[in-house]
Length: 309
Image (cartoon, rainbow, N blue to C red; front, side, top):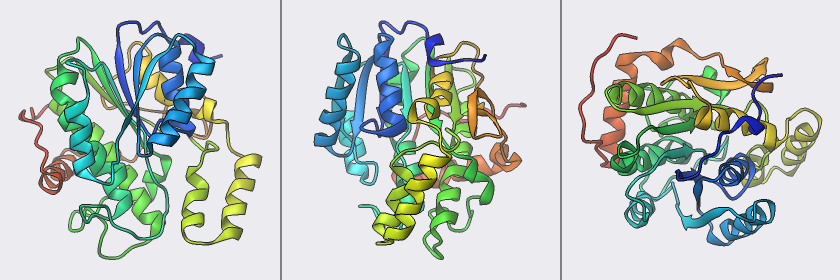
């Protein structure tokens, strides 16, 4: 039958942060972690929507220990404030879930192309700012949500932030490749620590993600088409969140693994997922890391160990 959310172990005494937890995959991830006893922070850009999600979560899990904190990944000042104000000395789990897909060109508060800025740079900065607390936990995990769309485009080493020539889908694919390169490099740099850096993807899951790009572009027909395809083809957010929850909680998850639905990468229980070989390239991941430190101003504070895999 395969792994399901019923196989999540008890998480009492664990602390977790889930970005983009007000809806879709992030909400389901936060809800299931809280249901199993973890203390969960719903990191949301909009406090009102976050509080509404928290109310829904507590209706499903009345004993949940959960709270909302504001995090805008499109603004590095907000990322720093979130990290500074997080009241935990130790963090057991960080789920880098929030993301944007195929939106019209725009820039973050710090001037980066928005998809790369939110999907990669915001999470890169957040993870770095929380790293000391993650390393203080006995067996912490960082799970970053990527996509099979990463197969469509690599990160441009000469234009990592995708600012020169913009195509919404190419920019999305680059940001998802960046997620996997980040996971690869974080796994290498923490090889001597008890931290597991892993990645996951949901396949095709019905969330707000598919309709947001057309809505921002003012294309109502395409927005309606996206919602129709979701109803006909996509899996539910509950099924879509399963690979993330597996990577976050299942025993034996390996560093730099990539988990997704087993059936054609689209449906089914969690299992190993296809992945572009370039997302395990040491030189490319180190180059992206150095560029990300330069762009965000966040340095992780430990040296990479060059290891054979």
